[in-house]
Image (tube, rainbow, N blue to C red; front, side, top):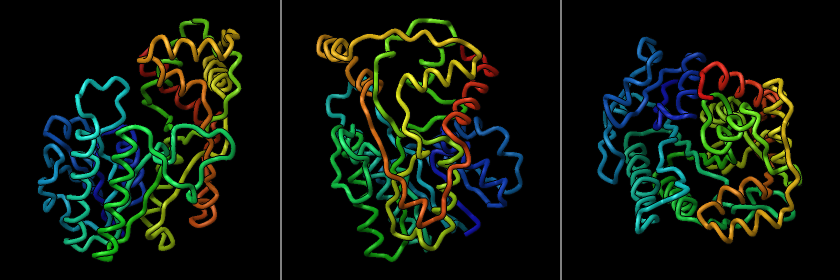
Length: 327
């Protein structure tokens, strides 16, 4: 399979994946919402194996025929992502429009066009928000807790249905927090705080979280496109190193040649803050809670191995942050 359609081609994962595919000799069609977003894929347009296709907003009626022309496999990254402060009155309905209905539309058209394989980037949140004992695995019963995760699980189920009805192969990957050059969210905020020398109240946290480096995830996606054994499989993925929030801060500080300013605050204080300020609860819970993943299945079945350790991945993330001037 040498021609891949990548949706969300201008996103955090999409840009890295397109670059890696092109470097490996694949032909790549990148799907974009608009001419403006397609223009942001500068660097790919000049590549003879890259084609940009504007499909508009993804919906249940999107016409994918031109984007799917000549394609062997689809990697579906585009989604309505998790929104921390969602002001929509019916968030689940909005998530379903993009994450379920639009995904179903694309997968149905892909199957009709004879596409052999459909790789879907889901989320570990389908398994649940936190682990309290052992790590999550593919054998666990799904336990989504918010509209975003519910919509991702529903999309997974639709893909399995379409595959059963048409014979198109699917691969589902559920990653945890993805980090690397260009990262946003909590990790970007942590880098800014460490760079500015601000004290951080996480010195007493003893959590354990699985992460996945951007480059490691991209390699897993490509194996999911290539390997026969990946057909109709679900994979949970991580770097294989569970780290605490203080560990992450120390690694960021080390990469910046700074001393981390960690303050020991009792965990009960974070729980109290989350109750008093509910809007801050999700971010605090992610910084203080544990989420561990067992990624043995993809390692054994696809012979996937992380190319970068967490320390190496954070160092490259910090280097990009310092060079880009986002501080």
